[in-house]
Image 1 (cartoon, rainbow, N blue to C red):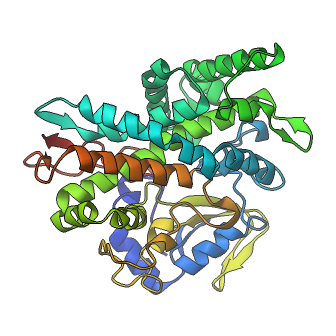
Image 2 (cartoon, rainbow, N blue to C red; image 1 turned 180 degrees about the horizontal axis):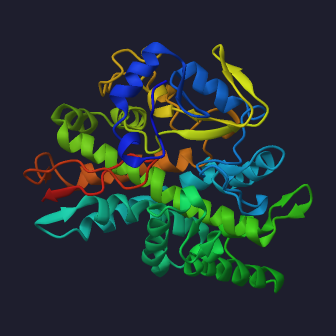
Length: 398
């Protein structure tokens, strides 16, 4: 048995050599007592697809941590609750809604780039974090002036131990652990509900749609609405921010890649998928196995845990030729599992791709070749969150 703790940031974010070896040896590796790591693409898809045998309920939480159903995020729900709630999220982020948001994404990207200091700037703090946050605030219909505070709360949550333990020193559960963040969401929901009840003309934004939507004829309870709004806010701050940061890092360190995406707009779409494949913002997903199962001939006992190694699957030599290289001509770059698969495919994937495409496009349009470079001596340092990959800083000379 190979000992490997994917819940330890230092191990998880530097695991590529180990995962390559495990992937060559087996599709399912035992990495600790009661824990298995799925290393290959086909088997990861199998586990993603099978929500009957593999449970979301524990999610990224530490063993023994239980969360009431109505407080769970989408990725922590099992059937029958998962399907209806996922449909709510899909309805909130339809391709039409995302497409209609693109002019706003472009204008905010240009605004942020124009506000960067003239000599030296951090593209993470100044661009890759605030852009998706502002887009999420806009789609939810929250006051634009609240975006900075919202990003601060979300960052504090994601970099704390809360994603594993569901608690902080302030208390257990979101409302107790982050009272300002939860209180803000509660206040916005109640204000919008009051306007709807009073017949006031309200915007047809994501918050309004979430409040109005019904599941089997019943509207979502307040705690579910709070969890979904929080899910949208933190999801935008993590997945999309890391996607932007990782792709900017690749462009700034690979002159051929930069030339290719400047030369051909279609190449940018492939670059986004290659970045998602090689540097996935989320490294893995966790599942429980309540009744036991078998994957690739390996027995998973009841109560054991299964880690779906999407970052490993994205480099599976059985699916991707020359898997460790960033290839702008890769024909199946979008076959990665970064957004999940099957019933657990991320409903925010379309938005993340749009923010990356429009945001990076604005960056390339504003700065001609050679105008932006990483500061001398720059060393990539990963974000603190144990299940994410992305630069903490991108200091550049302008």
